Every structure is written in C-alpha cells, then in structure tokens.
Image (cartoon, rainbow, N blue to C red):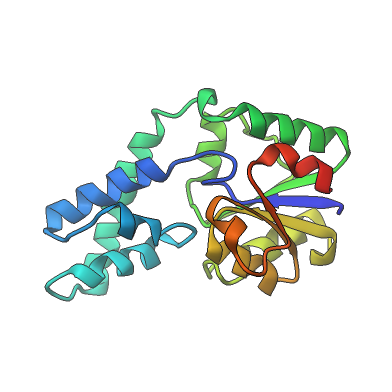
Amino acid sequence: MRAVIFDLDGVICFTDKLHYKAWKAVADELGIYFDEKINDRLRGVSRMDSLEIILENADRTFSEEEKKEIAEKKNNIYVSLLDTMSEKDLGNDVRGALDVLRQKGKLLAIGSSSKNTKKILEKIGLNGFFDAVSDGTNITRSKPDPEVFLKAAEMLEVDPSDAIVVEDAMSGIDAALAGGFKCVGIGEAATHPNVTYPLKDLSDLPKLV
C-alpha cells in the first residue's frame, strides 16, 4: 500500500460526545426524543442526513428551510464545543501509528464527511500533518458513497488499489469497498462481514502496510 486514508471521528479522535450534546440540545428544544442509541446511527453520516434520522421521531414535518436552520443551529453548538478539544484528545496509539507510517514513507490522508475537519485537526495538533484532506467541504455525497475516499486518493495521485481506508463505521467500510479500496475496521467496523482487516486499535496498523 502506498497510501493510508483515515476517517477522522472515531479513528483519529473522538467527538461523538460533542455531536451528541449538540444534537440533544437541538432535539430537546424541538421536543423530539433523542438518545445515544439514535446517536449511534449518525456515525459517518452527513449533517443533513443525520437530521433526517432525528426527525423520524418528530410529530410534524419540517420544511427544507426549517431543516437548514436546525442543522445550522446544531453545527454552531458543535463548533463551540470543539473549542474544548486539545492535543490531549490525540491518543498515544494514534500518534505512534501515524509517526511510524510517516517514517515508512506512506502517503497519509483524511477522508471525513465532517465540514469541521480542518478545525478539529488544528485543535488536536495535526494541522498540516496529512498529505491530503478530503472532507465535507469538497463532497456532495456522504458515506456509504465512496466519493470522499475517491477524492482523497485523487489528491494523493494514487489508485484506490494502492490505498487502504481506516474506518470505525459500517457505512465507512461500505464506502471503502464500493470505491475499490482495501479497508481496516476498528470498533464496530471490525465486525463488518467484508472488512479486509479487523483491528482492535491503530497500534497494529503499521504492520499491515
């Protein structure tokens, strides 16, 4: 493998709790039931698609304009919560794996649906570290569509067959496979029936590539 493409949330760092707090605040204001089980369904899903899942429990329909306003309010809350992040939110196993991969001469990229990817990377001390960043600002289709990974590979100037994707979400594994990539699954994604390599954590990743 010439390149490794990482999902961000749940792989490089963990912002699930911040997303949950933001969505919970918005759902509570609207009187819509929302819990951590529903929140689990939002992993790897775009903001607007996440909102559609939450609105399944609403007792009325919302116009497209209302949906945009709700999504914007959620994002404003989430972005303010991101300011609580720091380099302490980058685990030693992740940092170690990234450093070894860099020493081995691998091209490294981020493939994330989040539009806040660059801010998160800056907060955890990885601003400018990756050779390419493909995120929610340059894609039109969310995972399980492979667009975000294909654009990352394009930025790196590598073929999907020469790159491996690291994911923690089932939809992310589906996206990687759909794009013709090999894939590493950690967390829930390690149980995906078609994952190429299931791993407990990132410390073993350098051995695979």
